[in-house]
Length: 195
Length: 249
Image (cartoon, rainbow over all chains, first blue to last red; front, side, top):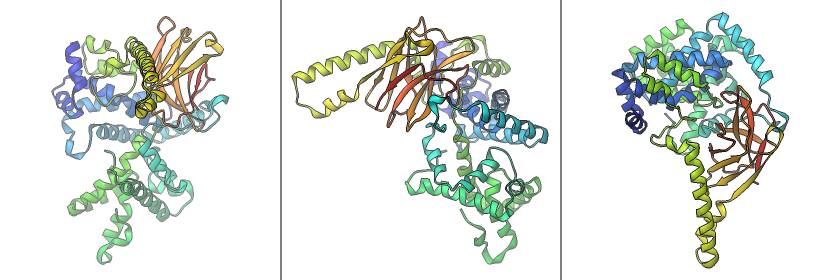
């Protein structure tokens, strides 16, 4: 089993997916170990609560297990696929009104309890996935806000317009320009959009 | 990545499609709009590439959240649900997400301690060698980069000490001694301080008071490495004062 475990560590994600299709739980464990942090981080950002984030991450990985056959390498990386499952399931949960109210409460609570200690008075910023975060920095705050409300909080553009008291056309425009600027960030540097 | 002004021939449906495309990629359409959008897309497959491009950009947002550490119990729970055998359940998961395979052994504290010892020896030998042969400027620079910064303990770890070993390629290893066991439900978390801002750099547990762990993340521009006690699973930002600090600047 130990030798087998080492083999999994050396395999590409796509090869592990092929084994997961045939219900190889060791390969699935390998995928889990590689991608759980990214999946959980996204889940936590969306749900604002550790338990809810773990529930969401668990549901998403179980869907990876059940729906491995639906993964198509030509549509994107395994990581992107797993994160899209987390995102889609998270949106579904957020869009139930009861869940949304609960999450808002939790986000507010988290905002209070996760203030850095006095020794770390500066605003929190994580250096992981630097490229994406640097790309987001080029966005004007009003565009970033609209993208975050849509992507992480699951609001429709109509809801965002109402929430921010903006014309719907303005919200649509900010979404379009925001995505365009992120794309432009990578193009200007001759970089491919990370997949 | 077109805007709504691109609608050819003033086609109102195409204009609507362009207006909705970004919101579609972000998952921000209402159910009715989404159905309309997907029906239009099905009738105009030539627009698939444009939508794919928008979706690939929107997908990047999934990578933006601050990194979080799930609880170890999540791994067991997920793997039990798929019927994984006991051997897999009992495998220690990597501390951090690793995309490339075959390096998990490197995370073991014993190996890291040995690596640190080897690093000390290499630095010493290189320094001695270069003192005799002051010829190769490039190698001298390399030695200068492999420096050791002492850490002093405070608070719960006032008797603790250690070093941060800079490996010269923007990476570092943290070695700590005489660390008390963390209180129940807490772990030690390492931070890289850059521009006064803490960035998570991994969790670790001392064994018999000793710990050796890689500092996760680039050390480029780092001002300090610090260690705090955090709730089990780690924190997105420090919730307590540092108990070990190595000033790098």
